[in-house]
Length: 121
Image (cartoon, rainbow, N blue to C red; front, side):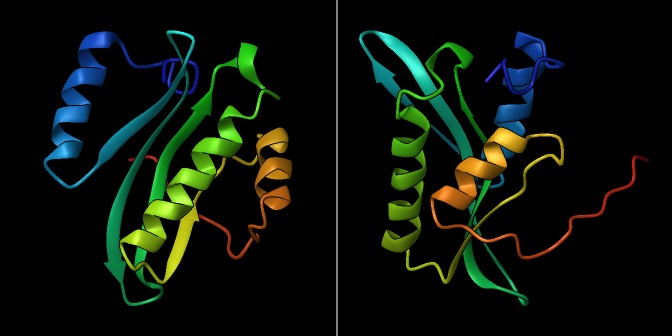
């Protein structure tokens, strides 16, 4: 997770995870040969726009493992979780600069369906 969120120290990461878990956030990882290869943080939520969804907050595969199929396995697992929990849709946001991730998501059958706007406060 540090590769995706390098601004978090171990202490701040653990505190943030505890707060998010209290709100339903879950974490999963894919391990191979004794090493974590891919990790995700996600939540099941409902809203008026999309109904019940599985929303992926974080999805990262170790840089050294890109192209090894680990991210694909993790994404497939997340989609299966969404179906198992009878979600209407599956969602994630991706930074505009993450072109490789965008190609990956499009290749996996996802669509770009909206723009996400934000403001730092």
